[in-house]
Image (cartoon, rainbow, N blue to C red):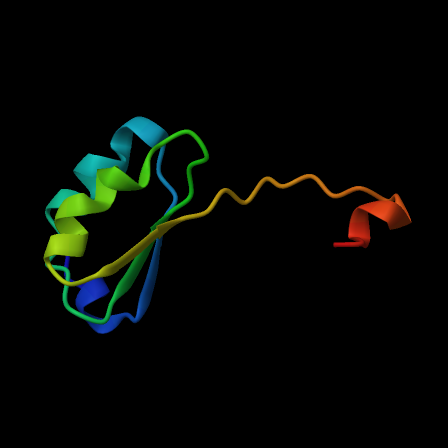
Length: 74
């Protein structure tokens, strides 16, 4: 897969059990950010990518929001 070599930010949106397979064959470069979209999978799944110089993260797109005004106060 060559597309990530031309990207600054890559979201991995596969099934949780396919994250490793989907990211292992990619030639990650320093400065690329790779984010997996799993709430259940640890960030350590992207440890090799971090060693290759990529910035790594995880983000789960399903987030609940309260309509209660008190919830907006930090």
